[in-house]
Every structure is written in structure tokens, then in C-alpha cells.
Length: 76
Image 1: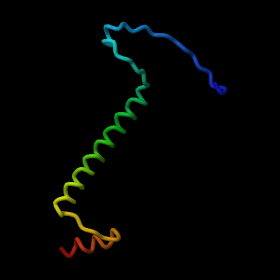
Image 2: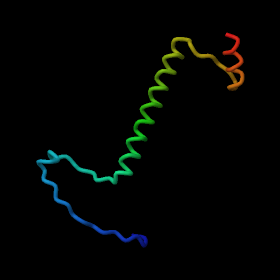
Image 3: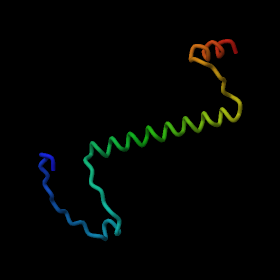
Image 4: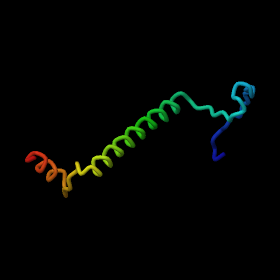
């Protein structure tokens, strides 16, 4: 495999433990990275949902730059 040594080992896990479902084995580091990524995605989706709600309710403003938006916000 392109100069990478691989070692295949088998671990037998009884079907009664997995209840017939497929099993994936990850390192703890990879698992924690995926959990963190999931949390970040869920947070981003929440922020987007809140932004869409504010837009529908007319609570947003249109500006061509952040500076313009901040100036407008400071006046109102």
C-alpha cells in the first residue's frame, strides 16, 4: 500500500453486543475531534437558524461593510 505497512488484526465481537449493527473503531483522538466538529456544526446551524428568524421578522439591516453596519447600529 504505497510503502505504508499495515497490520491486519481480527477482534471477534459477539453479535449480541452489537445487536447485529456494524461497529467502527476509532482512536480516542479521532473520536474527540469528531465530537468537537459535531458541536461546532450544531452551533453554526443554531446561529444560522436564529439569523434566518431575525431576517424573516425584519430585525436585520443591510450594509455594504461591517463599518457601515456598526455606524448604523450606533445611531439607532
